[in-house]
Length: 501
Image 1 (cartoon, rainbow, N blue to C red):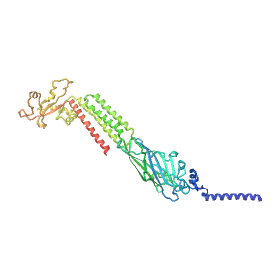
Image 2: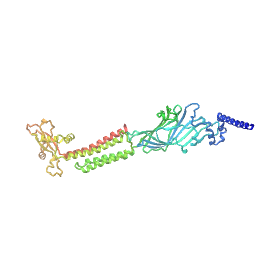
Image 3: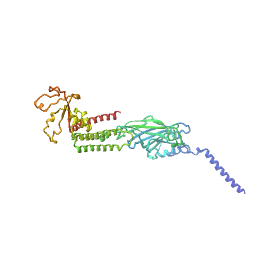
Image 4: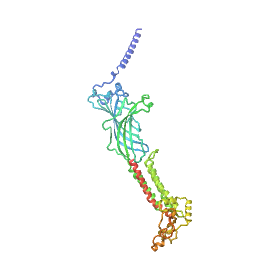
């Protein structure tokens, strides 16, 4: 009985003692933390494992969680590569080195290791300390939060200042305005925002001196870098229910780095604009061909049209489908309009050339020629009957037509090459045209004017007749001058718009 009592007493004693030890350890956890005294005697890894031990450092808490002060994170960037923005995908690629700097008082070790100047580590050190959680709001692909050891470098100063360096490769969205393409200027930006902590807890700030530096070897192909700048802002949390912290809302600190790019137009001038000018000028060759030469004029017109459409479509493939009109499309519509107008002009003069009846004109100018050619056939017949039934009709012939008077061969040089002038009473209030007959020209007589023979007849007024072939040739000759002048005017207006507006 006594031995059994002693055994139970011993077991109870050991149980109470172990419980007391566990209670003592829970009340005094610091006693189990490794000491930081004589820190210079430890290696960097040993000293860092003691400094960032879980017993005295929680990497999930802010550096100022005990005081409640705002944590200021200073940022700087070194850009060494910018890939030209792709208009079709509306993005650009950026390679740069991002540096973040903040102070964590819990990592200050000047008192424990005075001879140690700096602690340097890579991804393993990053897993031990607190790092601000940032993200790019306009990123498409980014390696900002990657874990590759070769891309991370962290240094801790004796006063607790942490410098976090990260080499990044990001594809960022750039919402371009292509209304003046290819004479446009684009503004693309990189947006850094705090994800977990709002502006009342964490503030992002650019470094005061040279926040963004560009590599001296930075070169662009399709663009030229015109300017760049930085700014700080506060953005409203627009995805409240998805943010960490149980749907917490508020304002979040943000940094923006914006650069302005100007597109180089040399490529487009040599591969698009100058060839299109030459194609438009090629369509004018039809004005030097005879109006009844249907096969060569149609072939030349359609080939220039198809060539220009092929040239323009090759440029349009690299652009996104947008709802507004671009400057390149205005050029396309203008050039296609000139080429199409040359085809319409051929159809117009070819139709006139195939007419058989002469056209009566009051004067030989563009107003009356175009008016007579556009007059309906019935109106032309009535006018012809009126001229033939006029009792005071007189007829004379011009000098140029009388020289070919003896030639009746349709293939000869004088076929249909004549002008006929008719006279009408003065009651029609038509201008008087002085004519000279062939006999008077040979005899050297004076020109005969209506009413100059001494009679009392009223003065007579003349009308001119032109053959359809003469009208078609006349229109072609004017088109040779009119089309180039209009195209020059179009170029003046277009290039003034793209460079001055």
